[in-house]
Image 1 (cartoon, rainbow, N blue to C red):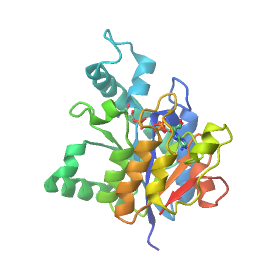
Image 2: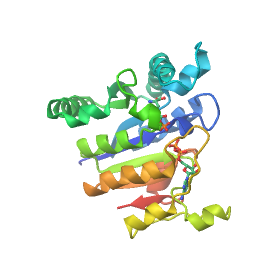
Image 3: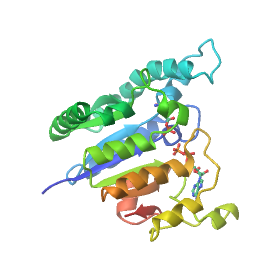
Image 4: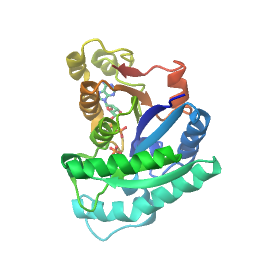
Length: 253
Ligand SMILES: Nc1ncnc2c1ncn2[C@@H]1O[C@H](COP(=O)(O)OP(=O)(O)O)[C@@H](O)[C@H]1O
Ligand SMILES: N[C@@H](CCC(=O)OP(=O)(O)O)C(=O)O
């Protein structure tokens, strides 16, 4: 049986469970779900969190807002982030690896071919690639604060069957319900262009792209006929529950 190829994007906000520390519990939840699904699905992860991990360990003598400081923090935090993933994934019998990519890599045919070949070898040998932006050489994502687009570009390049973006809401809410503090999830999207009108300018504690960047990401995958799900990553079992339709989330076909 051919496995369903899933690109899972998990942001700093979900990984920290909206605190100032990376949540080992969230990574355990992730590993537990991937282990349960491993006979039917293969996973590629785009994970943020390098800066958030570093902030747990160090205070650099400079203004935190400066982009170079964030790049330095990402460099300090990334190996810790991967160590935590590897420790926990190993306990669940999962193998993992690290890939650092930048947007410009998606503009060069040679780099694209190299990415596809490397990741295919990893996945075919049951390794879960954990991707983040190469923050030393590029600042797009730190400046705009978002891995959503990187996830969409990767999903497209690797021809996945499904992109899952884990965030801190039950998918995209109608603007009206969100503003009235009685959020209602848009479950299925009929008219994609109308979706853009539902975005509210608020963001979560650690997040910076807001819902807009998730919709932009979905517009890239939609063009390639890849389905995108926006789910609440703060909840336990958020992937398996979405598969079983036990929780509300937004499906963009
Ligand atoms: N229509 C909407 N439905 C749900 N959330 C929305 C909507 N419009 C804006 N948002 C905001 O988008 C946030 C999620 O994006 P973001 O803060 O960037 O999180 P992440 O770290 O997961 O990328 C939500 O917490 C919410 O404040
Ligand atoms: N690449 C950096 C920043 C990425 C970022 O902020 O993205 P996100 O948490 O998805 O809004 C990191 O790993 O900390």
